[in-house]
Every structure is written in C-alpha cells, then in structure tokens.
Image (cartoon, rainbow, N blue to C red; front, side):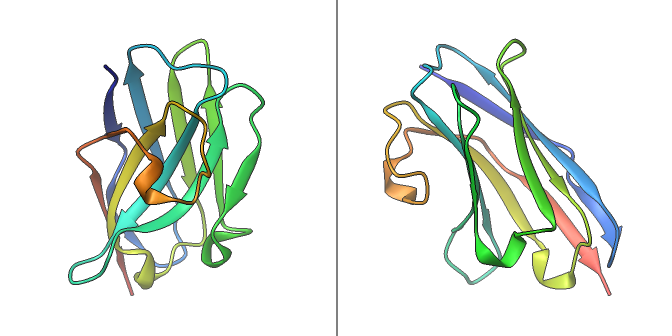
Length: 124
C-alpha cells in the first residue's frame, strides 16, 4: 500500500513558476516509476512527466519540455515537479502516481496508486 500526497499548487501569473511536491509513504522499489499527470475540466487526464525511482531517468510530454523538470529524493520518498514559464493552458489539477512494477511511464493505466491532486491556476 502506497499513499501519495501532493502539495505546492496555487495561483500564478503567466510566465511564473511553481514547484509541486509529492510525498510518498509505503514501499517504492528501485524499478518503480513515478509520474505526474494533469487534468483540466472537461478533458482527459494526460501524462506530464515521469521518473524512474532507482536511476532517475526522466521523460516529458512534448508540451512541457524545456519548461518543467521532474526530480526525486529517494531518501525522503519525495518527488517534485518544477514548473517554469507557466502558461494559462497549464491550468489543471496535477496528480502524482506510482507504477510499482516499472511499466511504461506514459501509460496512465499502468499506475497503481494516485494522489488526490493539487490545483494549478495560471492567469493570463
């Protein structure tokens, strides 16, 4: 059993920055994958970025490349998403998730546990 709690969301002007955090409790394996997804009203939840827990390898959705950075701290069981150059279209609820089996990180169906989400609003 893994519990995930996101924090760090809020209201920011376009061009600004936010840093999201995800605190994990429970056992996460070195082969696990942790990811960030987001969902806007009326839209499907979409992949943002993921990181392999052991090796720290990262993958990003094209629309966040060069603006967002995912990282993890294994010792603290934390994952972060540094979001820079935010745009109004980044407005969404952001969720962290863990795939304990280390499957394809972009596949939403592969994730076993999800947080409750943290809301990000970017004003124009």
